[in-house]
Image (cartoon, rainbow, N blue to C red; front, top):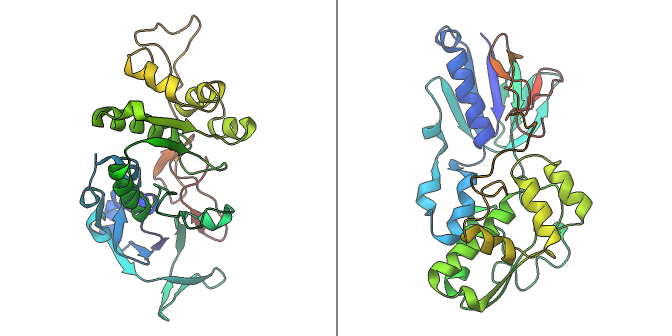
Length: 291
């Protein structure tokens, strides 16, 4: 019997576990098992955090019990992880339990570390300085924006890489919409402060939705007000191209991604730009990260 152990219970871990359950349905019925381990039972749909500060989503709409997100055949263990003993194929949990595995997938994700930016954790933290990458930060920012009646709002990706490079720009566009809807847009200055140009462009690599917006925001003196006003008037599409524009001559659509056989005996996965970047070392795999 093959035992697949997944460390983490976030988006990557959940999708990986459910994909395995689908691809190996017959093997799961015959005894193959998958287990996910996480320290709490609260699954947060992280893409929804961007919309919480503006009241578009409520907390109850993006939070579920982790076990509710898993397909039958996938077990859930709630515990903190102490360490991995790769030589013995065992994971030691903080409560003293040991969980053996045949294949280990590491999908523990990232955490916000404001302490690494000097001055962030001062008196203004979570009162005037916020993040929206955590549930606590997004909900406190929502309350602060509701009280905000005028002044300057600064959106500052301090450094790259961040786990969603385009999210701060999306936040700026949403803020423009939000304050316009409240009728106070003329009393508020939106300022988008970027990292150095080299690091900013590294995030987009000249591809995807983020790169045109990053380049235009940088040319506009690190402010998004001009671009946001153009977007309201319908002159700019989602990727920075005027609405209704015809692709340039010689433009070719991106090639279809080739599906290849997966590492666990046949499960297909994307060969390029996969949501799961798999690294192999002693039957230990990592889900997430850069393709």
